[in-house]
Image (tube, rainbow, N blue to C red; front, side, top):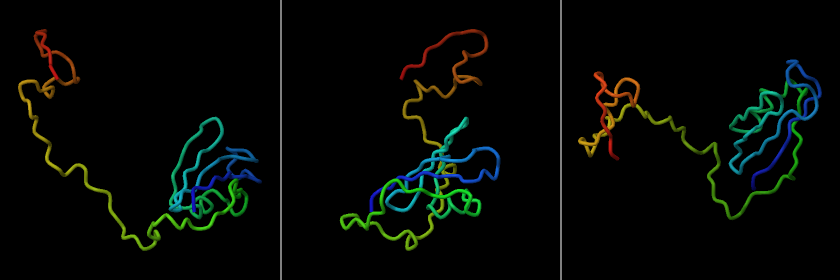
Length: 131
């Protein structure tokens, strides 16, 4: 299977925000994940784990349907992806627990630039940071 394009067609505007007709376009990727781009005055892009999630949230009981632009293609024999349901859950890494790296060049450090990033130190003395 390769990526596959679609549109969301809204037959009845339950929320009164998006109107009827084509309201969004999207792509379903090879692994089943979906990126969805909304039309309108405030266009946004959302990412979903699968088309079923998009329909569950935005389908409004059949008021909005998926219209596939590309035909369904069978599995790609050259692509060896494990089925998503067989992958173990992976928590997001804790990006804030690692110790702060040490500056390899403390003489030219830009860490002491003042409270506003690049403001000169109190007293008006000027200095330069070389990198």
